[in-house]
Length: 141
Image (cartoon, rainbow, N blue to C red):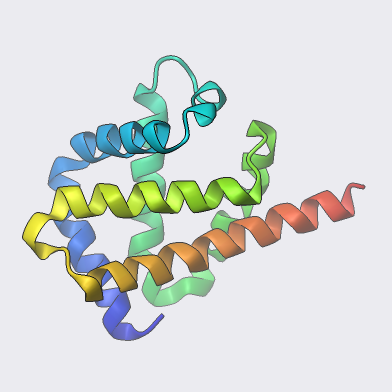
């Protein structure tokens, strides 16, 4: 991630914060539309799940300038997602749903440069989560 990409992600996230509840609704709607088989992984009442997602995204975005500081939390999240039977390919669907949600929520602020910045950011964080989950599985095999 370049400093410019970090700035783009942080500045566009700041535009999402005022509509965080709508963004969470959109995200899960997009996710379940893209892959309905993911719905049973989540609770019937999504209120708390939506809050957790947005809080986690906010923490990650705010920590991008000091990535090392958020790596332990991101790794822990990856291991925790094993409890929900999340597999590596599911991260691709989540990433696609996130990008679609951001495009919908940001409107004219969404462009190729912003998309690339978010793609790099998500890919980086997802890779850390997947790597931590893989390590956990190997060490407990």
